[in-house]
Image 1 (tube, rainbow, N blue to C red):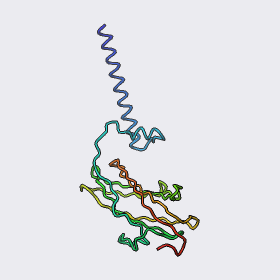
Image 2 (image 1 turned 90 degrees about the vertical axis):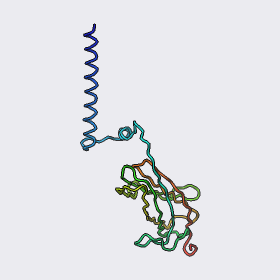
Image 3 (image 1 turned 90 degrees about the horizontal axis):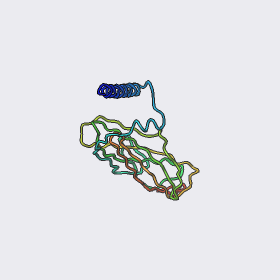
Image 4 (image 1 turned 45 degrees about the vertical axis):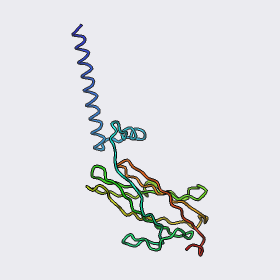
Length: 188
């Protein structure tokens, strides 16, 4: 009877070792890029099975719409009214804490009419990525961006939804900023 129990224990131990080696091999192949996950498999691989407390901060400060932004990232002629068909520049300061000595920030935005209709949404390929190695507690980064409003967009009140995320720290903030689009001659 003891021999059968010992044999069963050895079989379970061998099975566990095979599972560990198979998993290690699969993870190594994934890391080397030999194989790649698709769809829901990628989500499963990104799951945090052992949650680690992620501390830190992510803020958007000093947001401004501008008529233009110079090469030093200064806002020229701050305003909230723009002509239909014009280019709308904006700048802001992102304050974030690096995670494990790395700061990665992703900026994206979308523009909505006052009635909630989406007018413009930056696609994933249009995201702005910022990456920095840092040993500081916090970093302040000035972001500048712009979008052009088409001539076919009706005038009225709009909202810019600014989405800033730090994927390394697992943080994301969304800030909303109103602006007016007016027919030529009515904007400040």
